[in-house]
Amino acid sequence: MSGIIGKKVGMTSIFDAEGKNIPCTVIEAGPCVVTQLRTSEIDGYTAIQLAFDDKKEKNTSGPLKGHFEKAKTTPKRKLVEFKTFVDVKSLGDTVTVEIFAEGDFVDVVGTSKGKGFQGVVKRHGFAGVGGQTHGQHNRLRAPGSLGASSWPSKVFKGIRMAGRMGGDRVKVQNLQVMKVYAEQNLLVVSGSIPGAKGSYVIVDK
Amino acid sequence: MDLVKFVEDQAVEKKPASAFKAGDTISVHYKIREGAKERIQIYQGVVIQRNGVGTTETFTVRKMSNGIGVERIFPFNSPNIEKVEINSFGKVRRAKLFYLRELTGKASRIKTKRI
Image 1: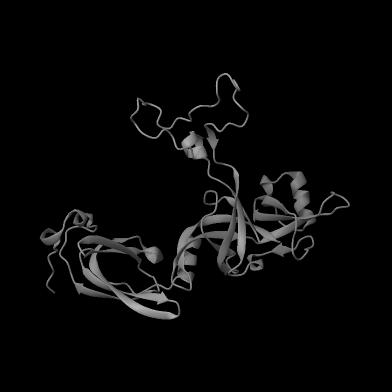
Image 2: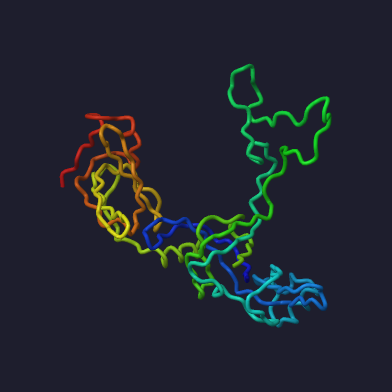
């Protein structure tokens, strides 16, 4: 397994070999720099830390500046650790979009768009109250009973209720890589991925 | 959005611009694959809208099939479209002819432009 950090660019649709119109997402992925190697002797586990997206030196804290200097690279915005990597890299190496090929299946991790405070129908897929007759009014999207009276006479922990929705880490599995443009660092995957345009995503192979 | 446009330009083969508009009657020659065999199906009807721009443009063709209205949306740049034949140019005052959905028979005729 190996992966890369990217940025969601937007969606479009392209035609596959059969002429089917496939909805696709364009991801600007890499180039990422290896900024740290976690080893079992020092850290107790093995992993590779990748960095992506340049930022200004004046916006970087001193400790981070030193961290990037060790890998002989410019300061970056996003740092992510990958537990397993197919070909083990060394400090300062770059990982580009070329690790993917057309036809590969990838998983994409991102942060979903925030939806604010939402009711149970949108947040948990409750059905709401069916009809408008049988004496019911003003509770079309209500959650219904939270628990019975004499037993358990309490509300169990974890009962699904209204609340903040979105802004969660979401993983979408098995998206097919449709195109790879190494020169522009672009990756085109079929289907949609979580998050807004410009948000960071992790693409795992 | 520049990068999205780059992908569209690279990945989609654009067809030459076609002059048909809403109101025109066209025949779409559509390739249909059945296993290894390929045949061409002709779908004839009135264009009721052209939607979108660039590589993702689509057009909607409406026809009456045994008294039932049928609408089909084609991607303009679809490689499965062999060709689009324009049968007649319609004279309409709108770009989207959704009012045709409520009309049948004589009322749903469209005046043709003489060229």
